[in-house]
Image (cartoon, rainbow, N blue to C red; front, side, top):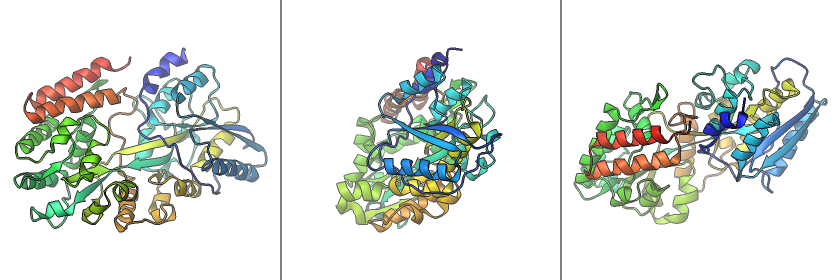
Length: 431
């Protein structure tokens, strides 16, 4: 089998979450469940984490594991951010994949298809300790098993400008997506925009889940965006646009990263989504005058989940030691220590998320503390949007948003926009 041609499809989609400045140290026992004695050499590869901030953590975690298991030597290596996908391809093709390796879901799926990764559902007895959405991100259609331990996670929350909501008589943030659209209608008629972004296939998936329905992002191997539920939401946006509820920037910048947050920071729109660290790291820095007006709530439906994981090579020379070390890196205590340096990220285990004060540090603003609590609480229901490993990439997302923006303006129908986005994705997916 040509490994490179087998996994190149998935690796073409770069991970949504990449940590270039993160980590902490710590210790607690793992205990590999793969057959055999825990001894031998374990190679451990991370992605762009070798620097003054993180190197001490990884050196410490290797030494502490070796101390618990005197027969084991851990060799830590780190690859730079640029070219990581190519490096993984080279390692897999030459059968030199490290024993324990940091992989996003897209990379892990294709490596699992190529028979390169161990099934941790089979080889570990503690897979149930990890956040369900994180486990689901590494559990793939057509493959039995789970191919990574969730390591560090991100998500999105809702942020509201309460001063603007108050102009429509609202004293509390909307609780659902439908309530948000109703509030947008009220505000739009007063000349106030609420919607600072246009929906995309990924956000439609989240919005539809908040209505108690499902969105088949991929069905029978094909992207499916044109559904009655999706059309209804786009049509509602078009109505809201006529009422003034959609900001002009939302349409002008459709497909531009972070455009919704930038719009919200201007104080001219009532709602945005952003990461859990938005209050202290963005709003307080870029729009401090807006701080007193902003309130945070949890994400809608099945909120988005961004995840990095720790996988084990199926060809590890010391499989028991490799599984034990992967468990050790991702256990509760070590994940908590890791998150102390990974501001805005959350642990991959259920127990570690129970007390975010153990890793989140001191919030500079009260609403930031609330955001941290909301994010930790929603980790277990958050899901990776789209279909990991499907070949859905940023260019498809951006094209879809541009077509949907045209539908909102009334230039084309909602059905036409979604069909064009769907056709574009299916025609351009790597085979």
